[in-house]
Amino acid sequence: MLEKEFQYYKEHQRELVNKYNGKVIVIVGEEVVGVYDNKLDAFEESKDKYEIGTFLIQEVAPGKENYTEVFHSRVVFE
Image 1 (cartoon, rainbow, N blue to C red):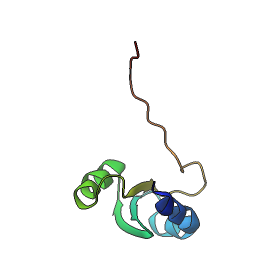
Image 2: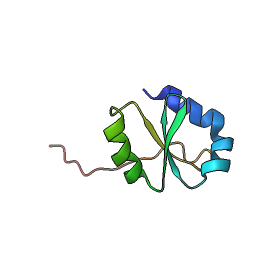
Image 3: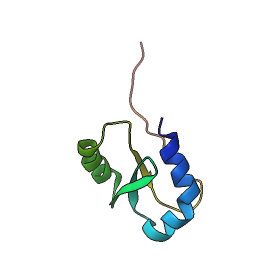
Image 4: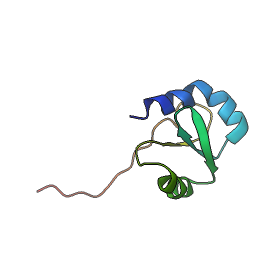
């Protein structure tokens, strides 16, 4: 799931950082299809254009520390 898009980001990270550092990009296949200032805008516009699960939203920054992000939710299991 989205391996191709993530692989594209990793392989082109240096050039993407040079062009879009600090921005949020949307990748479909092996193509940057959108550039945004934040993840919410990237998601809101992309969900109307592409099926959920077919696009990668990636913050552009140097280094490997930005490869993944963890979201926490408050869930109670009984």
